[in-house]
Length: 399
Ligand code: PMT
Image (tube, protein in one colour):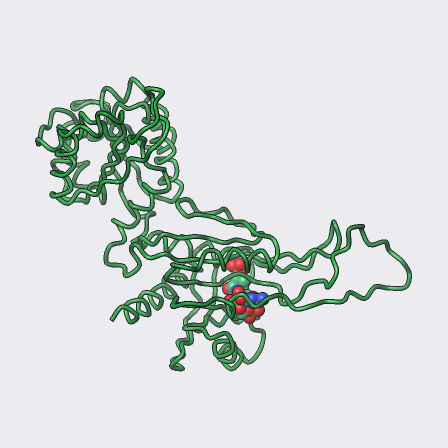
């Protein structure tokens, strides 16, 4: 289910939007996919194959019988290896050829030969897009099971506004993930994940924080993305690279995270709170840096809002519990008090587990009192286990 194990053929055709395909290739490659770019001759007029080769780190196919390419003679091998074929941007011309089953270039051959799902992201002048022939061709492709993404409305190469802009990169990548994630139980679901450690300002230079690296929450966001969910990652400061292909909202304090979660959860299917949120903040934020004195210092703290408890509506709620003693007992109490569906109890005193570690030892507890103690796993593996349970809960809610 992971994007990182997937082989994606990215077909690029001769549209002014061809340069945007470089960003698509880059994000897919960063997410760990093997991206085989196939360019039509017209596409090469707009962007050099060297760009795609550098971005994907793989050969780029531009000719039907390119002897320098590893796919030269057995051109169907590209089609066979693909987990998905995405044509972005797709011109009216290539859409017409695909609808008619014409295979006179490597891209059309690949689409015709593949058994993988095919995504088409049209980009062209508004009049060409609205033309009855183009519309009929797109209908034919839809009827064959192709997924059409976009186009969007806006500024076009002609200098006019209209329908025909290539869909946003994030929408194209979301659709690719959803198509790959079909059957995972999360395809098309909206999942909000929180991560990182909030920082509560004491004065202009100091804050109360914690040791969260963001690794656990980011792994959850990545894994949900790879299962085809549309993911919003709300992250407090973290030291981990943000995953590609997910929407990101950055926050600093518990209050800011609370507001971001409140805004994001209406309409979402699940909220997974892996963030380490401060329970207390300084009652007063000082505008001036506190001066050192011999008298010592007492800070008055007040409670932060409890984010999980404040979330309303029919949404699957998953909390984490960072515990240093009485793991299961304390986590069960939090599950009850915060009205959660699931809690992931994290023994932060266990070796190689919890804050900053690449691995985690957790116990997953549900409302029915089922206690599932997992061995030490990578954070990505923990994420997969948690998402299996989220998918079960969502399937149960649909029945
Ligand atoms: O980021 P890493 O370095 O990978 O580390 C991962 C982790 C240890 C931070 C993570 O696995 C974890 O345990 N996160 C929860 C930390 C925490 O705040 O636990 P808690 O027991 O204090 O809170 C319980 C739950 O309530 C959490 O889901 C928390 O996000 C949530 N909470 C806490 C306070 C608050 N004001 N509002 C909340 O919603």
